[in-house]
Image 1 (cartoon, rainbow, N blue to C red):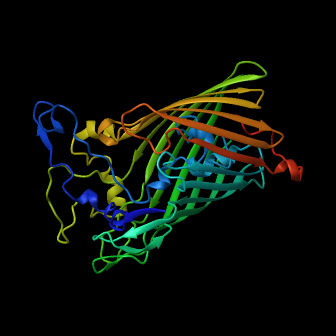
Image 2 (cartoon, rainbow, N blue to C red; image 1 turned 180 degrees about the vertical axis):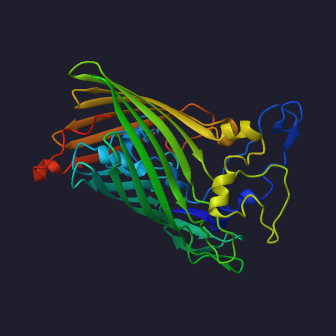
Image 3 (cartoon, rainbow, N blue to C red; image 1 turned 45 degrees about the horizontal axis):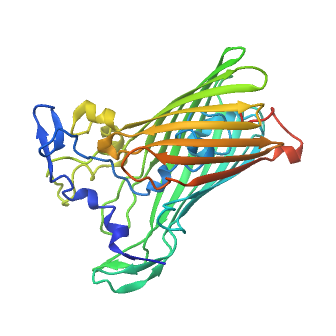
Length: 406
C-alpha cells in the first residue's frame, strides 16, 4: 500500500493555473519565451484531465512508436481509428491488452483494454470497447500527514463505434464514449468535498485505402478523438479539458514476395486543448486563467493559434511517430518504432520494439519501450502484452482471410 497526500489527486488538475513559469522570460533575440538566462525554450506542456485516454493501449501499435491511425482493421482500431473496421477482413474479432504502468516504482498500477467488433456485411462494422486504468490501493493523508482512509483510485472509458464504407476505398466512423474518473471520491480538502468526475465524448474517424500496384498499398488515416465535455472533481471548481486529439497518418505496404512484406508507418498528433499562457496574468471574473476558462469548442478552435510562441510554438505541440513492420507469411511479425515530442512540451522520446504471432485465428503481440531522453517514461523497461482472437474461426464465417496484415 502506498501512502500519499489526498491533495495530489485533485491539485494536479489545477496546478497549471499557478505560476509554473516564474523562471521564464520573453527573448527579443529569438522572438520566443526562454528559460531565464539561457536560449533554451521555456517548458510549456499542454495539460489535460484523464490523461489515461491518451495512453496507447495495444501492444501492436506499442511496437510501432504508438502509431495506429492508418493501420488495418483489428479490434484495437477502436482506440486509434474506428473507420478501419469497415476494411477489416475478419467479420468478428476480440482483443485484450494488459499494460503495467510505473512498473519500476509500483506493482499494482495498470491499464487494461478489452474490445471487439462485428461485421454483418462487407460494408459496415460495429464495435465495443472498455478501457480500465487502476492506480492500485492508496492510503490517503491530509495536509498534516494524518490518515484519512484508504482508496482504490480508478478510471475507465466505455465506448461504442459504428463504421461504414462510403466507397470502395473510403470509410468513416463515429463513436460515443462515457468516461468515469474516481481519484479520491469522498475525501475533502478543507471544506471542499471531492467527487468522481464524468464526461461524455465522441470520436470521428476516416480512412482511405488504395492499391498503388499489384504489390503496393497506401493507407491514409485521420481521427479526431475524445471530443467531449470538460471534467471536474468538485462542485465549485472550473472543469478541465479532456485530451481531445487530432491524429493524421499514413501506411505504405510493400509485398516483397508471396511470403514477405514490409510496412512503413508515420503519424502526427496534436492535442486540441488550450495552451497555458506564459507571463499572462489576465484573469476572468471568477479568478480563473483565461486560457482555462473556455468552452469545449472555443478551446478546440483556439488550440491552433494560442501558443505564446506563435506558429513555431504550435508546431512544437505536434508529436510524430515513425514505425516499420515486417511480416513473414502473415504468421510472424517484427516491429520497430520511434516517438518524438518537443523538449518544451514534455520531451518524451523513445524507441519501441515488438513482435507479433498470428496462427489459426489467434494473435499474440508484445512490445517493449526504451526511453531515449532524460525524462523517465512510465512504460520504460515494461513488456506490454496483447492477445486477440478471430471469432469467425469458430463460427465458420469470414468475409476475407487473415487480418493481421497492415
